[in-house]
Length: 261
Ligand SMILES: O=P(O)(O)OC[C@@H](O)[C@@H](O)c1c[nH]c2ccccc12
View 1: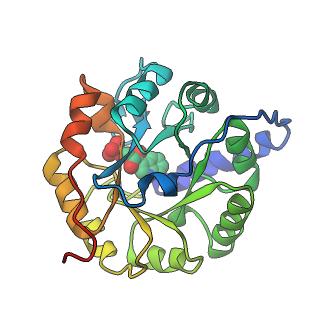
View 2 (view 1 turned 90 degrees about the vertical axis):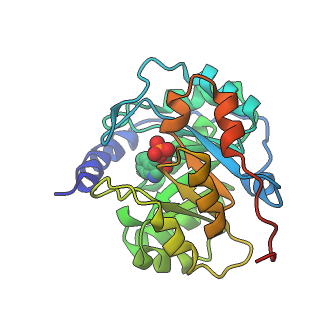
């Protein structure tokens, strides 16, 4: 059984519980879309993540105040904030997301293992603007159903892939936002070459291409940009940084002008 299987077994239990809960829908002030924030940006866009711990790294920053952290990310120029809401494996929560929603005016990505529409309802009610769909965690039918469900609710969808087969499945819905995860969720191995390899297959000109996981240095970001990524998703490096502004400055490299290559 891979770790991903373990997580998905837990998620199925969580979904059963969520279905018994009533959803409190609050009205939040509208925020600009993630797409509009990153299109045409001259510098690498950053989705900055709130991540206390992970199954592969253990504790990263257990005592973090998500609101303070999110405000720092916003001030430093984040394109969006990713909030891990999974509790059993990442020590996050939907309460974290709600708290961050009250504190910032930029898009929020609900980072979880979504397998059922009810999770999308809860994410939306908590104030999320973007949801994650992990292609490796879903059948084709599930993926398509959840993708349509979320877009009908005016949520943006980050379609996450790790290999060519997953990428091909994802491309079938003609997604606007594609995330290439450099970390294999089954083995936790990180290989920045994953972005190089998969980005070269994507021909869609206006897709938003995100390189996810393992970004530590300016050189890592230059490599992702060279591959064609216009967004990076960064968790650990920002969570461990004692100067978020400085770390942002290092990672926000100028983007190559489109068509120059
Ligand atoms: O902490 P890192 O290596 O910067 O990674 C961030 C993010 O990409 C990672 O948390 C992530 C990417 N896809 C996921 C799916 C589920 C949970 C976590 C993730």
